[in-house]
Image (tube, rainbow, N blue to C red; front, side, top):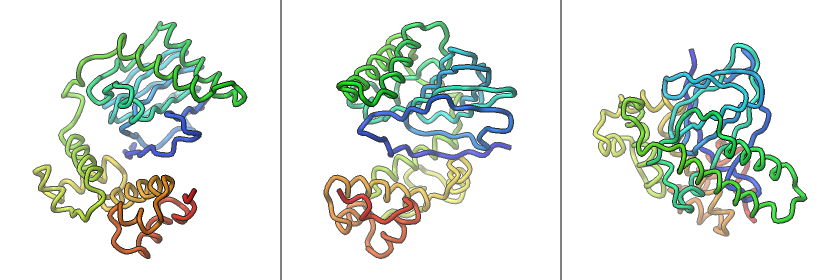
Length: 270
């Protein structure tokens, strides 16, 4: 039985607003054992073979040149009974916001076929991305990505996500995550989170673990460490970053940071 995990994409490299993974291969023996979901919009392009993509419980065929759009916070899983090659594009949610594209309110068509313009833009994005010597590479990549998003919004969007596609448990977990993100800089308790979303704390803990693969405390600490890493990169001292992100004890912060980030806070010092 497939598990479920929540992913927090914050490590976008080279100051680019996306993560591009090309020619991912899946076989019946080389597939993830977990479904996953995240805030960031995701686009998958089948480059060869055949597979299926599960989106909030609905299965979509995935053939060569098909495009799958994984909307924000949709639980998804990509698999195959044979062999599948695909390219995966994870788009930084803040880039969408900066460009005035409300990825959370828009619901993009899950499966897109026969869109030559969108296919060309995805191939162009990959070509420029893989050419590190390309003049004005970063600016060009941003421009291609923006054109791609505008095309999706204009030609493949529905005004809102059908409510039946989202369970009550998922809505509660999303509300808890949103509360944590908005209050990570101060002391917060499980009782406070549960009260805010009007849910029994034990039921919330069970749903959170099932749908994210981690406990609420683990998520809070991981998110705080990620935000602290960004603060240190921006010029704050380790002590300042710890305080800004809700850590009252510097020793505990350093220990927790190393556990979740795999290195010490000073590693992020510019």
